[in-house]
Image (cartoon, rainbow, N blue to C red):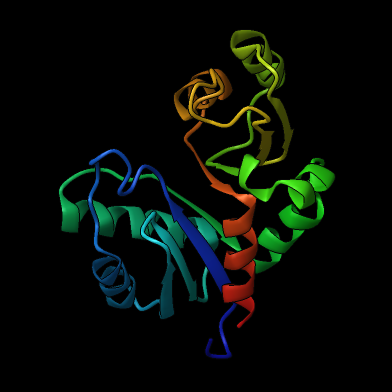
Length: 183
């Protein structure tokens, strides 16, 4: 990745999942280039964008959301982190042992905003089950020991009980995004 501006990671919520918000990654890179974001690269087909950009991350995030709405005709929430914030989230993972053992069952869930006090307790009470969920700032960490498929700890439940938009990536993808941001 080109030197200069800081590396950033943008996660698009609900892209290419279940037939909703279908976006080709080439189109996503085109939108990023149109905004002046440097060296945009994508990972997988689920709305993972790595780029370099100067400016306030919150402004870049808002500009990217507006550009996506203009190009694709519907609102797509974007959760953006600098590469430094992403590396900090990796280092802070309270489920690190689980992530090493079974990275496909551990998710980093990027939150749009820090949840209010008491939100995590409400989420845990509402979802029950064997899942583990922890929150540090704007990042939630979840372990799905029985898989995500039938869990009540869904993205909709997370958003409803935490009061903010959210999108998750499994630990394998989290590490690949960090590597891409460093490269």
